[in-house]
Image (cartoon, rainbow, N blue to C red):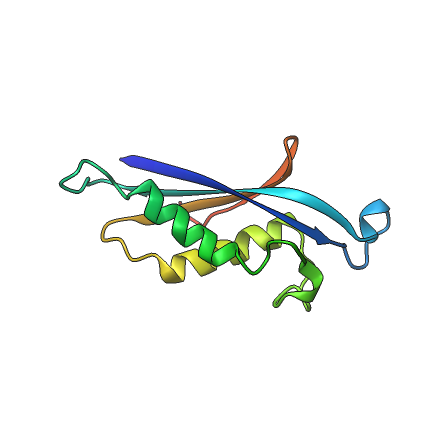
Length: 125
């Protein structure tokens, strides 16, 4: 099996609702978003998926979050924009748009900092 991972970066602020601590205040991060896909077969060029195409898809999905207050962007106007919730939402949006035969979305990792991140993957993966 092959895996391909791309990483993009966005800058966005958020605040954690119903949280006791500094993160209850508005604060920002340079978020690193890593997307990993997997599959068994390569195309005639020897690729599982073109890095450029995967990165374009990820950038399309996260464009609305870049340079925003996540708490103002649906669905995070109703759901607290934690790294966990952001990873799941990005996963769902990429999964819905991924059009590459035999390529399966493995996981999405959202890093708030070099030392703190959350990963979402479907059960059984």
